[in-house]
Image 1 (cartoon, rainbow, N blue to C red):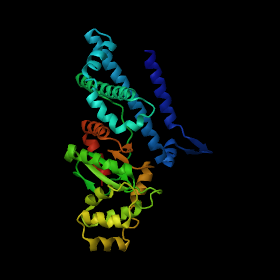
Image 2 (image 1 turned 180 degrees about the vertical axis):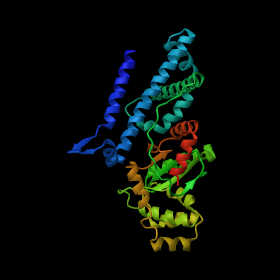
Image 3 (image 1 turned 90 degrees about the vertical axis):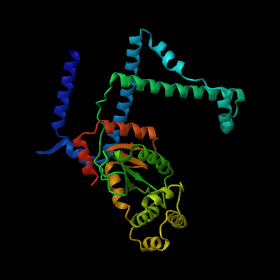
Image 4 (image 1 turned 30 degrees about the vertical axis):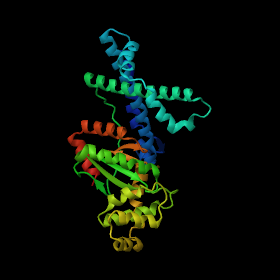
Length: 338
């Protein structure tokens, strides 16, 4: 009862704060919404970071309560359940697995004897297997308990303008802001290909330019990619540009265009014309508006994801979006993609 009273008090204060102006100049008020609009993109990343912290702590709380409940159901302690279902289900690493790994990283263990290094590697492998088994066990408990997370992630309306892979009616749209000279962006190519292969028409991937100031050839590469797009070979060129993982010379651009099956003369005519020299600007402006400061940055149905995250991270968010897709959200996604 006391908690309920406190919560009502907090909500009342929050409601009062929401209508209270941020400042007044005589009889003129500056509202909080006006302030938020002026702050713009700077708040997007803060809200996203806050959500990620809250979600990670929530996931830990859910896991702890699930394990405690399962232990109580079996009339054992949580520690005993851990030993049975997690430690007891893994296969300890054996020397035949450890030694080949050691041979490839022996220089990382300078100052240790081989036996000491092998022991450290074995301990690392064991901890990794425990973590994997724990995640699997928690997943099993979640499915049986019917866990539903109601914490709503922050979303940003992002224009999905640009070359796209996947169905225009897909319930999940991923907008990527990327830089052809960025090696981390190159790492994301395979991940997104895996996503596309796994989810098919349920996911649409849209590419947008965000050449970083420090990457002197990124704008030229973006120009070449626009020429490739005009000639119907954007994705073939896209995949090859990212294989370089660094600065791209004009020689690289022509070589990759040839490998992508682009007619040399048409590509040369387009690139030398300069018609797409500043074609990257609208995308970069949009990225700045929604809070992009580094590459790669992704928006999955408006949910910000920064960095070259692994497939598992994408898959988790996509699965949540597919599970929570409603007609209203699908309509909103369709509007954002226009």
